[in-house]
Image (cartoon, rainbow, N blue to C red):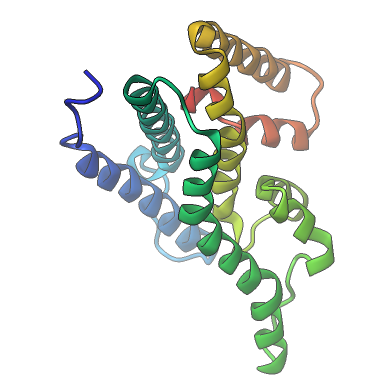
Length: 213
């Protein structure tokens, strides 16, 4: 089965609709923030979260498919090669954006005497970015230009554990997925009905491992 499928027809179209929902969501949010005419009160323009969750689902599906295909073809999974592919695919652009948002942009704004104060300093956030926890920057410092990187961080943390899990515990992977989903439901229940802090709620909302599983 794994050898027969080399390209999934229709996924690019689904990616387009998911990305479009995210763009619509942010565009109307920005217009509302600056008191311009906005369509934010219509549900269609509030589904950015649905688009992001779909990308998580798609990412988890494709990565798992490739790992299972590799195991079917070679009777093993190379964790090293998996990590190398992820690093080459994601890290260059990710860290370039981190450098721009934490070093270059503040310097340029200062040089141009732009009346804008960055919500954070390089030393306050670089650790979160290096260890792929940009969602913590969002929680601690609110809205900023690198805010969308939170989803990349969540994916990277997922990749770190998923390939070894598939290789070592493939027979129990369904149980692992169900455990992750159950754990997320428990934490979500605590976030909704428990005496949880705002930061806890935001972190639980960001860590969508159950969607990738």
